[in-house]
Each structure stands twice: as structure tokens, then as C-alpha cells.
Amino acid sequence: MTEDKPPLSALPEYNMPNFLNLFLPYNIIPLIIYSLIFRLARQYVKTNFWLKFEGFKRYRLQNLTICWAHAVVVGLGDLILMFTHPHEIFHEVIEWYDPIAAQLPLISVAYFFQDAIDMLMYEWSSYTLELLLHHFVTCAALVCPGVTGRFTLAAGWALLMEVNSIFLHARTILQICGLNTQFPGVFRVVVYSNIISFFFFRIISQLLWTHWAIYNVPGLHWYFVMIGLLGPIVFGCINGLLFMRLLAADGFLPENLRARFAVTRDNKNEEKEKK
Image: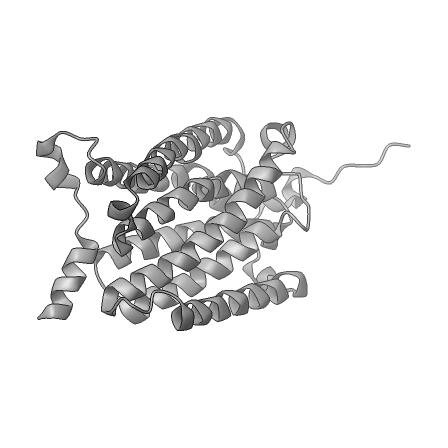
């Protein structure tokens, strides 16, 4: 006898996700633990790192140190996950699930929650709103594996951007603390690594995901359609603006375009502190 398959309407991807599932033990306990780890890590960094700097510059360096640590853990973990499942990442994106792999999006949800709190405590600007939008959209997607038991590899595609974040945050740290001028050779390696990894892990990976989503997401519940198809549009805008800012800051754009895309976040906050 063959086992009867459940009707499509009974599958999680065809129904509104039950966000109360986040409070189930296998979700809420890891989320609490990861949140505490990030909170303790932030406190440790604030007590022991970048103490020779003052004000907003110290906050930025300490915040970016945690950002970089998150990117290393999640980015490398996700890269291993994707490379060890070459068939599943294209053909079992919805169905494939592993409780260990599902920890990666939970780690990131805890990180983004703590990072949002940290930002709101120290800074309120257009950049804060931009990052809060990024964090909200990201978490809306990353909770899907936990609440449905599906979409682990969909989250894997999204988390590939953290591979680039390793170099992105390292570049900013070197620039803010002044090591870019002390070690220009190292800084140029980081700059080029950032541009190259940005292209592969924020642009190419999202194009591959979008191609998959166009053919596989329509017909699912509207929430997953929104995440799968509108998510790449939002991140395309965010990443496009970020890429132009990086190209401008690192001298890859013509002079007339650099001023248009130049980032003045750190300079503006330092000027406020001096007044």
C-alpha cells in the first residue's frame, strides 16, 4: 500500500504561518540563549575593546565588532550548509529541514533584535531607519523555518549575504579606527575582497534566488509570496544603494558621483558631539 500524501492545503507553505510557534521550546529557548550570548558579548566588548576612542566612534567600533562576529559565525556556517547541499538548495528549498541548520536563522534573528536595541539606544537618524527596515524585513523572512518547519534553505540563500558582511564590517572597522592608513596594503585587500564578495554573495546569489522564486513561489500563501518575491526587491534597493556608497567611498566612481553617494553618518555624529 502506498502512503497517502496530505492535500496541498494542509502543507505549511499554503497557510498563514502561525507565529505563536516561535514560543515553542525548540524556538524560544534557542532565541533566549542566543540573545543572552549577544547581550553578554556586547557588554564584554564595551568593557574591553576600543576604549581609547570616545563617543559615537567608540560606539560604532564596538557595535561593528559584534556585527563582524555574527557575520563570521553565520556567514561561514551558511556557506558550509549551502556547499554541502548542492542539490537541495535548488530542488528542495521548501521541503528540506534540519534542526541544526535551522539554528542559523534563529541566531540571526536574536542578533538583529539585539542590534536594533543597541542602535535605538545610541543613534536616531535616517541611517537608523534604514537599518531598522533591513532588520525587520530580514527577521520576517528568517522566522519562517522556525514557525513552519520548512524554508531552511530559503533562509540559507538570504544568509549568504553575511559572507560579504565579514569583509564589509572589517573594512568599516579599519576605516573608523584609522588602521586603513597604517596598513594600506591590508586595507586594499579587504576593500577588493569586499567588492568581490559583495558581487557574488549579495548580487549573484539574490539573482539566483529570484530566478528560483519566480518559478516556485507563486501559488503559495501570500505571506511566502511576499517574502519570496518582494523581499528581493527590497534587498535589491538596499544592496544597490549600499554598493554605490561603497564604490564612492573607495574611489571606484567618478568624482562627480562620489559626493552624491558619499556616506556622512560617522562625520555627522562626530560633529554633533563637538557642538
